[in-house]
Image (cartoon, rainbow, N blue to C red):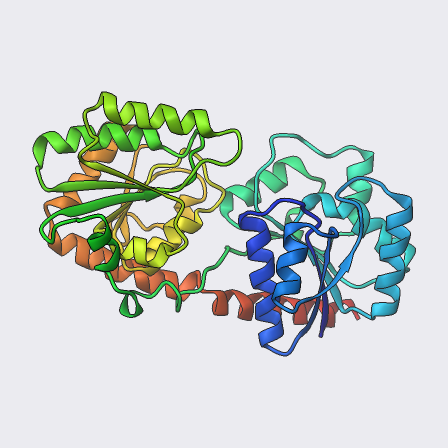
Length: 373
């Protein structure tokens, strides 16, 4: 099998990281894979560092006749069995390029983020007509695709994002390293969240829950992991000011950016995921893989991940009092923390591991290639 992956983004975030990992997994299985990317973009540089073969084009969406012809010629000479993109805008070059190349090979797209814009006009019908299968990373994204793009439901399949559960494995991680760094006592219970400082991630609810719980318990530590992206510094300041307003400065640890996420998660006793709306929720899956019981908002992609009263607890989205109440259930019950944690690890390994993901996507590739012959 010979695969052309595509991600013409010039940013560097979850989608770009996932694309690199997905290509690496194909290469590990002796499947030939080339990445189509924007020259000197962060994903291009990362691909070169990882010895991934690349082909570059200076376009990142919408019609560009010169670059489309260039990509079309590359597809024609490359003898690829399929094309798979993780960026919706890439269809504007891939669809016409495949048509110009007179190529009938399958075209896959993975939709990671929902859209509020309906795209069912003539141009979008032309672009999407060439798509063989669209992967939605959750049920809410599947519904979003049905509502916003001109694809028949039979072409849309759910394929959850994945993580490396061997990297996020509690048996391999020292859970005392980060606790020691921040001078956290053995009898203190750490409740943490992991998210960049962005509106809608639930920092306000987390801090209000911390305020409520700190009145009832004197052995709690709250950990906020992450940093603001460009332009989000004011929001971070707002959250830090709120922490002071609630008199929580001696209870809350702001870790900033961390590259040792497995170790950070290992230091926590309870993981909170208060985000208002997530297409999926990789941080939640990582915490589950680290055998952490979680309390998460009952919305969107979270519902594909957490099983209420089995791997954790769901709380009413945006309701800090309910968040505090559900966290309290875990604070007072060692038994629930242990049982939910074990069930969470099991679910993460069985459903959200990258090996499982790769098996599933390669099987779909093979079936589609065989059908298209």
